[in-house]
Length: 442
Image (cartoon, rainbow, N blue to C red):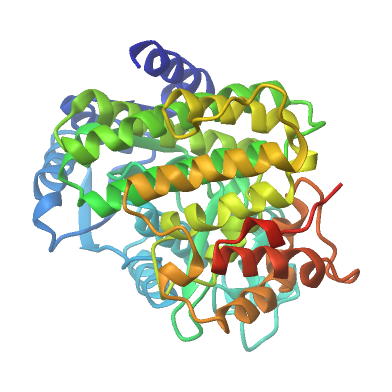
């Protein structure tokens, strides 16, 4: 696994250069103050202050800020799935403190909430009305910024950038510290919405993979499966794109690192080599979603936030979408099928297999991997009622989530009834586990 880890590190360094400091080295956090100084001498730190596992990490950050003369105020982090209420709380603090930089410490939920809060604190409701044609009743909320490119429109329309973010990642999962995505949850209706914009990419990030040693096992496993979902969904939709070969290398490398490291971590949580491999693999997942976009499984996961974690939801849905689009992704299936076969999750030969048959073999390998981790393989096993399928179909038709339909190997058109014709039977298969009822997209 060392040669794969070395190659992953090279790719990440070529991509982010000195904007990203990472590695299995506790000293990387000692440079937080150095990185913060790039933006100024006043910071707002948003951290899991009440969590024992984070105490040493937070103290190391605080010590580094002090050593570099960076003044800071620290507040409590956002809860899981980045609820809107936490976004508003953090935005209020940003408006009051007016820091040069905001430093979220934690996993994807906290970093996503800070991204959204930085946007909200940077613009007035009247500016949102003027630039984005926002409605008066929602102009003071995060609602107008959901979708693709709205933050960039605000920057261009007002001449003001958002408050810079120095993201301190502590979980190998969503790679929120590297990406243009901010997932925010409306807890009232149990639905996630998404900001997609280059403008919310943190201009600096730090990840000491050692911090993941303190993570609960379920969080570690969920994060790894999220990384696989990022790479596989982007890779499925990459046919014909100019950067196909780059995505192919990133996806195969990332999934190989994750598939081989998660069982080792589950057996021995202190396995540093596996921890590094997992961190590198999920970081590559972040690179993948900067080159392309996730699709159906991520879209479906947004409607399951009240039932399960994001990574677990994606791991349930991905095999079924793999079968749906099998005819369109033959090269991808061969590439990733070999990864699962090498790891022992596919027994039969892939030689001479093609079409939907090949899709089913790879899907069954994915399901076998999930089961080996004691993860659910169907929506029913997640505890979803059959009515949840209609909720997911309704959410799929929301124009603010249209990008997920367009990212599919064959984009779905709501107006043409594709959601009913293609997505519905796929979700029904994901509920029952019956791959045979999934239609084919030629």
